[in-house]
Image (cartoon, rainbow, N blue to C red; front, side, top):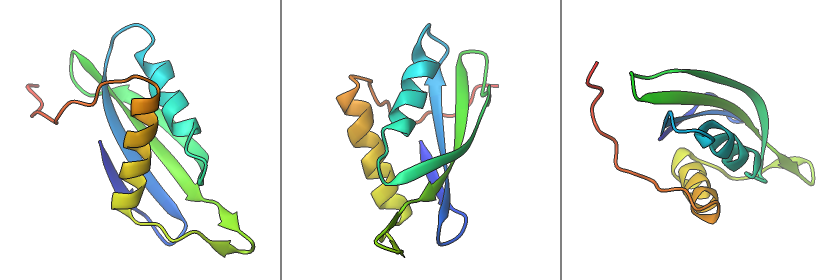
Length: 98
């Protein structure tokens, strides 16, 4: 999982997950549960023969007319919290074998 800041308001979060039945829905639900963000766009592509990658384009929500203070690390912490709430297992990244 990685996050990249595009500008002050937008981020891209990339999540690699197994091709197991139901995994894509759970990953998308985790992204939708990020209360501080609007999901702008999602693309899903094959990462390798066993995994898929979800690229989520997010916009930081405004609170009382101003943007929430946010950075990549804070965003990843929020994603990790939601993933754990859904009972998903986060594994350390490993190199693509393809």
